[in-house]
Length: 219
Image (tube, rainbow, N blue to C red; front, side, top):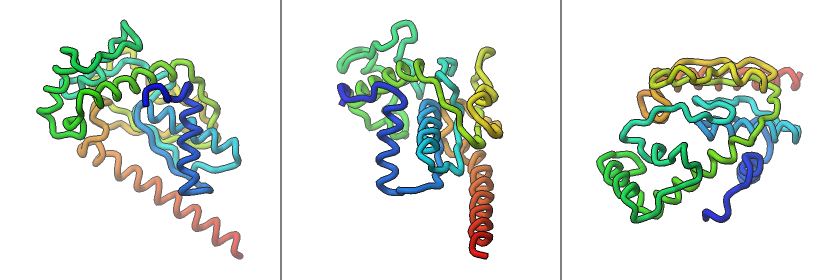
C-alpha cells in the first residue's frame, strides 16, 4: 500500500509497538534491528521507555543515525543499488529495463528475493526509498541503557561511521563486536554464526539477572 506509508520513523515505530503489545503487553522487551531496522528498533525502545516500559536488550546490526549511503553493493544485492542517490525518491517502474535486469539477477540467486514479481519488486524499492527519506529527518531520543552493536567490517569505505556515533544517544555503554561480513550479508548463515554466541551470552546474562531480582523480591 504505497499511499499508506508512515510519514516519520516515530510514526512507524508507534505502529510496530501497537502490534507488539497485542502479543506482549508488558516488558521487558528484546529488540534487534539491522540497517534502517536498527534505527526503528532504537526508536521503539525509547518510546516504550517514555511509557515506563523496559527494553532489556537492544541490539543493532551495522546501523547509524541517518543511515548514510556508504555501503557497497554486489550483484546479488542490486535491489538497493537501483535507488540512485543522485535521484532520491525515483523508483524504476514495472516493465522497465532496470527492473527486468535486476529480476534476472535475482532469479539466479536462491534467496527469498528470487521469487519477487515485477510489481512486488517495485513495491519493495518504493518502501526502501521512502525509508531513506524519512530517516534523514529523524533525531533519536536518549536511550537509558546499554546497546549491543555488531559492526560489519567488510566493504566499508574511509568515511564510514563507527558504532561510537551512538554514544551521544545512549546513557549506558555501546558494546560492539566486529563481524567479518558486508553490511548486506549480515543475515547470511556465516554472519549469524559469528553473532549468535554473543547474543546467546547477552540473553543468558539478562535472564540470570532477572531471576536473581525475582528471588530477591520474594525474600
